[in-house]
Image (cartoon, rainbow, N blue to C red; front, side, top):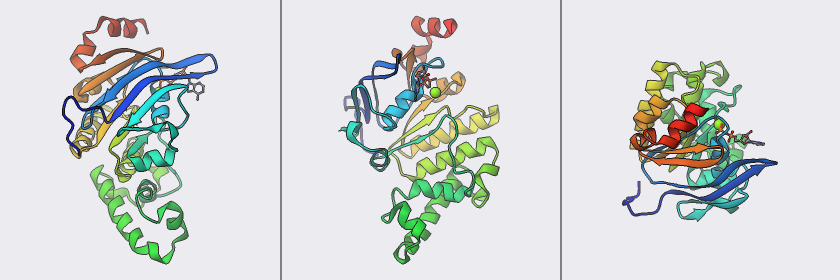
Length: 259
Ligand SMILES: Nc1ncnc2c1ncn2[C@@H]1O[C@H](COP(=O)(O)OP(=O)(O)O)[C@@H](O)[C@H]1O
Ligand SMILES: [Mg+2]
């Protein structure tokens, strides 16, 4: 992890981001920064533009106007694959795994953006990739162990309970060795016990030096683990600050009570 003094520019900078879908102005002139090494949360009512912002950050679709700067590079002209190799990984609001593949194979997909021969070489099983393949499996097992799933490595991903499928997605994201991880509603569908474990896991990930930006509806989890919170409402930034500051902001209270 690089040192980032308080005055250093953020690892991720969203600058006047705008995105419309037809007549829906999903993201309105949003600006904020994410400092390296923090857990930052993005909250707001349904339809506020949170997932759209994640899709913009990860290059799923382009901005209409504005800039997204990651590690001092404008992401605007980068393809999704390049963004992953630049160090941005994500999980999805609706878990997206290859359900017919094993848990281990799902994590290997995340890893192959880092191996020299890449995913296609791995599929072709070229002779020179076999040693790399073995190392990749060891690394994938390491990340499965990290999320508590080493025992299920050879199970079919689709056969796991929902909460564990989320953990596979997190392991796959970690396997790409990201500097920034985006988690879209990681606690959705988890019970209280699983949510507590997820909070611990997110802290452990942060302690590895990975910066986390999460969208989360579970307010007690968010208030407990986030160093900083950005609040969106109807596409625009409504508030920003520490959990305590945001919780006390009249505008935030009104938006949530009104929703
Ligand atoms: N791919 C898309 N095509 C059309 N409209 C979209 C698309 N993605 C999001 N929207 C619209 O943009 C708005 C914000 O959605 P979203 O970013 O999913 O909100 P959130 O994640 O905060 O609930 C909503 O009105 C949604 O219907
Ligand atoms: Mg969403």
